[in-house]
Amino acid sequence: MEPTIEHQQQGIALYIHWPFCLAKCPYCDFNSHVAQQIPQEAYANALVQELITSLTDIPKKPLTSIFFGGGTPSLMLPSTVQTLIDTATSLLPVSNDIEITLEANPTSVENQKLKDFQKAGVNRVSLGIQSLNPTALKALGREHSVAGAIEALSLAKKIFSRISFDLIYAREGQSVYEWENELKEALSLANDHLSLYQLTIEPGTLFAKQYQQGKITLPNEEISTTLLNMTETITGQYGLQAYEVSNYAKIGAQSRHNLTYWRYQDYIGIGPGAHGRVTIDQTLYATERHKNPQKWLKSVQENGHALCVKEALTSKDKAQEMLLMGLRLTEGVQAEAFAQRCGVDLMDAINQSMLTALLEENYLSWDNNYLKTTPQGRLRLNAILDVLLQ
Ligand SMILES: C[S@@+](CC[C@H](N)C(=O)[O-])C[C@H]1O[C@@H](n2cnc3c(N)ncnc32)[C@H](O)[C@@H]1O
Ligand code: SF4
Image (cartoon, rainbow, N blue to C red):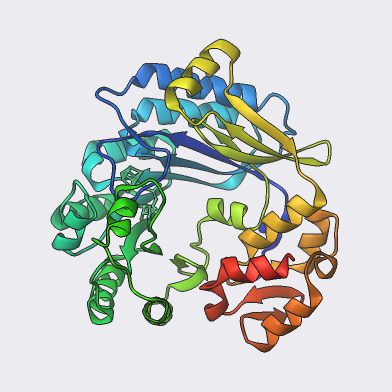
């Protein structure tokens, strides 16, 4: 998948973080919190305030996407989503085909709410289904049932033309055969996009504790590789191509918003813990907001924003980040785009002898000015980056 002119043209994306969930899933280390009662109005006002402040000092590039992520943004009031979309689109020029995604949990979406999100301007939903197996859903600590998830998906299909859903595989005790069946069922239900994540044990989660106690075991590297290869083959047979380590889409249906991150283009991030990468006067800045929701809220109420990091990135920082993101993509990293963004040639940024070895061992390929990972390379991304950047 070559970048189109539209992708190369420098627009800007907007990420909005909603930090609340109905329950904390035992595998999840996202910035998500369970509140007795969500202070809807205070958070809505603060998000709008932080959005306005964040747009004051950045160049007015066309807004190409908005992503409401979390946490569980489907717990937001549709009126809050509407106000945020209206504010962003009134303060920035807007790309013709702007993509506006909202992450929704099957437990927190009902027909009317989905319709109201659509009326507010959302044109793509990403549903957190996680599994089509009832026992696995329970083990993952999910609040919804398989029937509830399928119901949410069919409601979404009536309202949105662009729909994705998430599944977690390579789970405790899941055989290759079981995943093959679950995946085929998912593909028969899928629209134009799927996010398929292998379960990872994240520090600080309940699963991490259970893993240390030996209560959870995960597939070994050989099985993970088999599962990934099989996933890429089967999704391909159903017309969804792997375009990132965990993401599969029909042609043209890739998540434009997430491509902004992976292609290392500019994005604004607002809300608790949100990160951003914004270019001001030719300098790329990394931005970060206070992570703790209460601290974030207080800071926005007092200062109009909760920015706690705004750091100018060096060529070396940029080179590392762009490789880290770009090598996740099947399309890889384009040498020209790399030099333009990082101010250093791709070949000068990486260790030449390691590159030669990784090309020979078939972990990387060099194709028409794109440095790419092979499928087996994508499974060992961290190790590859460690040696490439030595
Ligand atoms: C921001 S999260 C959740 C969105 C939404 N709240 C939900 O749960 O449906 C995005 C996705 O990351 C995936 N995820 C989170 N933690 C994971 C882990 N430890 N291993 C694999 N996938 C994970 C899940 O599939 C989840 O839907
Ligand atoms: S997976 Fe989703 S619902 Fe579960 S805790 Fe994380 S963000 Fe919340």
